[in-house]
Image (cartoon, rainbow, N blue to C red; front, side, top):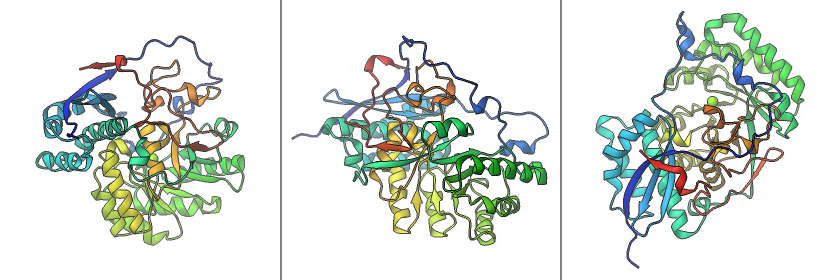
Length: 398
Ligand SMILES: [Mg+2]
């Protein structure tokens, strides 16, 4: 059988048709509409918000037999240029299924101008499309091609501060966003303790409770916060420090050795995670498939982490089929995260790209048809490929 080669890479916008139904109305605005989250930008005494260069774009890799796979990438304007000018020429002509070769070509081919950060996000878009394509050609779900399934169902934890709504729809493991950071001083610690105490009361003594600190602390503040929250038995404390504060991570590890530490969503490529594994700086690595550089890059890190006895739990992994397939296939993935995209009263199944409930990032890259958890559990996602339900005529090349 002659090899099926990659012949074209397109960057596309996703334009679903207007929703035919109005959708379920929300009982109240979601927590994100009013809750102020601490960020590293709080250092500045002026109001400045973060800026990302462009939204979501979709990457279509086409084979010579006409089959195609679909990936997506954040930071659309920059990713579009990188994919068209740098990445597509590297993989066109390669064999469909030679994904590790394509990964290495893209990694080495971008070394000279930097392959972390935005480049890794562009690489991820192509890499995800390669896996989808291979799965469709072989008529198999991606989790099976990647060594799985490891389990028949996945435990899901929910992230979001509408805890009453998350309880109502069956979740049993909860992660909150932080209200305060290091620049709020002692009052920030007291305010955080009040929120966590209230939530522990609400969810009961047995439920898992975590706090996402999104880089808003320094090492000393992190230690003070962990000690103040110790009575509430935090399942883990997440991303308390800036992503490359290696000395800080080490200091926190030494000063609060009893606290489970998680981080890694802002680590791009396998290398920062590899360093954290080698130095035993964290217990749980939370790579984001779209930011680390794709399915292949995260898989390499997962195998290295597993060899060291460290778990991984994808950032927002349950919000789209890519993360669901990856989690189903990897050996060391005890949990998967669902970012709570549905406002109170709106079923999870209604919150996808192009739905009446869509509102920018709240839908979190969720294509229509993505399986949603029931009672905090998620079954194996459908295939072939990633099982995406995106008709070809929704994709407009740019
Ligand atoms: Mg996080």
